[in-house]
Length: 293
Image: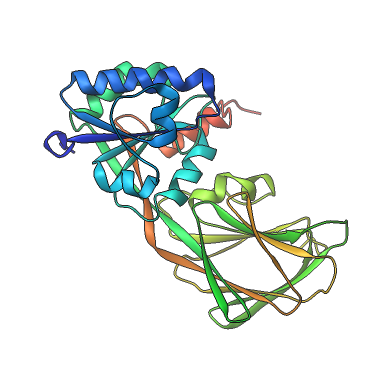
């Protein structure tokens, strides 16, 4: 992809709690401006890094101003960016300030090489689908976006929860478990993987339903079309159940409540560099050596 003429302004967004990595933001700003491209930044990022540029309090407004966003942090920072950018079509390149991440595209050590390549248009864009949870409390319907997953699990205590799952209006099963993970393709390498779920290629348009410590050993992960409508009804009165999205608690759900989960019409657009791939990241992240038993 040759997009040099399209990149007139680059937005900068950082996890400002990672103080040791903020010098990377300053370095990136200098490299970008030397290439003749302007910068803008999220307000907290600009303040922490003493950047002299146009600033925005709201990340979605930052995205509307620029042609590319650099996000400095880890996968957690990328997840927050996916939420805060609110379905923006502006592509995002993650610069990892720590270990290797599944969502970040390059490390800090690679910036001197990576940024000239990106500004020269030597990159590809991959659209990762967002998913949505729809809830209803009285007359107050709410929609909650997520990139990785939604989790319905007990709020406190050690008792199992009881959930009934429907797919496109048809009953699938009833779970007695510690919780249920409904993940997107992107989220297959997050909580779902830790709970025994399958690794899914990001290009596979599927949901993965993974029960957490199910009472019945035959309850395994189930793969469903990403175009399905998944409804999860709470059957138990105790323990209290909470709905979380991408690790953030959203709300408590009560007995009889139903959470509906569908594919969002929005996507998170990730920048990928030449030579990078999901499978290469898997091998590195999971330490797959290819050795024989």
